[in-house]
Amino acid sequence: MSKILKMGLPKGSLQESTLSIFKKAGWNFIVSSRTYTPYCDDKELEALFIRAQEIARYVEQGIFDAGITGRDWVLENGADVVEVCELVYAKASMRPVRWVLAVPEESPIQSVADLEGKHISTEVVNLTSRYLQEHGITAEVEFSWGATEAKPRLLSDAIVEVTETGSSLRANKLRIVDTILESTTRLIANRQAYKDPWKRLKIDNIARLLQASIMAASHVGLKMNVTNDNLEKVMAVLPAMKTPTVSQLYNGSGAAIEVIVEDLTVREIIPSLIQAGASDIIEYPLNKVIP
Image (cartoon, rainbow, N blue to C red):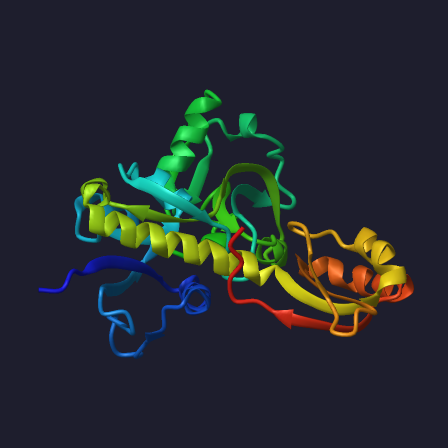
């Protein structure tokens, strides 16, 4: 009988970005709009799409061997799981999300101290209650079933809501008072499953390749040719992850250089490379980068 790793994947806002990261890592899922069980081209992997809010709890219970969810939901559920690795990606960007305390722009609330006796709406009741307790504040915290940003002014004095850019809060004329938690996506595992040698190796391999695909998303490869006279000048320009690969050209007149660099630096690097004497410069995308 073949071995199977059961994994929970986030349904909703993180679904598409998660599938994209998995595809770059080497796992392809075929998703039907009428089912929560996608087909995976890895016969050893069985996945189920479910809300990220619930995954940590099901991993703790052993219903899933592993899962992908935010660290915020691990903390909110108080789930006793193994955090295998951090996967820094969100639905719109490659950066952490923030759970923030927000109030209407015209609200007199300026700090957590002003929340005494107030009413707060949020999806993360436990995180918010702990935050208030840490600051010695007593307030009413109510679970929000959705549309949380619409509740200040009429239904609550403040909200605790998740944001990547803050644009939705600004659109609803809300002002951030404080950040209560920064969170990133995590690959988590059931403690018993992670003690099984086969499952641990499978989970660790998935973690390694997912991290490699995330790193690749922010890096590109550069190839170029350079004459011997200009080699040192070109090498001085390159901010390589490690020492660049340098190969002598066939006729001995120069070298071919290959290097991995951060995507955001390319617009400054390429003009500098040209000025230093590099030619035949090629930029190419990456699927995985393993340091």
